[in-house]
Amino acid sequence: MANRIVNKKQALLVRKEELLRELQYYEKRIDEARNTKQNSSHNENDSSDSELEISIEISPSIAELKLQQSMLKTCLHATQELTSVQVLQSEVNILVEDPVYEGETQITDEGTWKEIIVECRVDLVPFSMSYYMHKPNRLFAPVSYRNLNVSPVKVAHKRELAKSVLSAVTTPSDAVEVFRNYARAHRSRRCSLARLAETYGDSLYMEPMVNSFQMLLLLLYESLSDRFMLDTVLLNVH
Image (cartoon, rainbow, N blue to C red; front, side):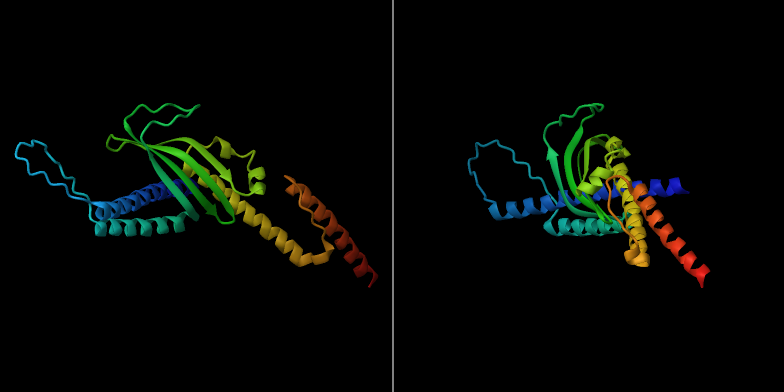
């Protein structure tokens, strides 16, 4: 059951990335259509000796592009709700040459390379990702990812995730899943400390320590034990 939920989440994350790329594509098409309409000029050649053949490519209208853009935004927002991932900013660049990357299997299939840079947030944890995506020209060919770079924005998050599996993941969906698990644990830890502080107030002494949450709990336990011993003595006296 758990594996099925994880697979479903990963599929939704992949779909969200595809929607983001399509959204960027249609936004560029709208801008290109507007610029073409404003800067268009007609050069007529009345020479009967001219054998130049002109081919006209009919592109979707601005209204159609806007409709497709609206549908993609709706799908993107729904996917973000299901995956709990908020996309703060994204940029998609279509590469005219194959990118250079090392340490990964080279892709020889003909297709389209894209460079993707995205800023995301999962709950209280912001992070950035950049990677290359290759879409082969073959029908139903799988998408490949290369040169994935993931970095938490906050120094504390970066320090805590330094020894995690984050540096070993190779796909954006796996990276997002790592951040989802970390964000869940991060919020749980903050809530636990907040409840302790609210319950015992000045009786507790809490000092943040680097990579030593267990030691912090041990100090709190010792402090609480002193208080419990004092309460027991008072009860015995009365």
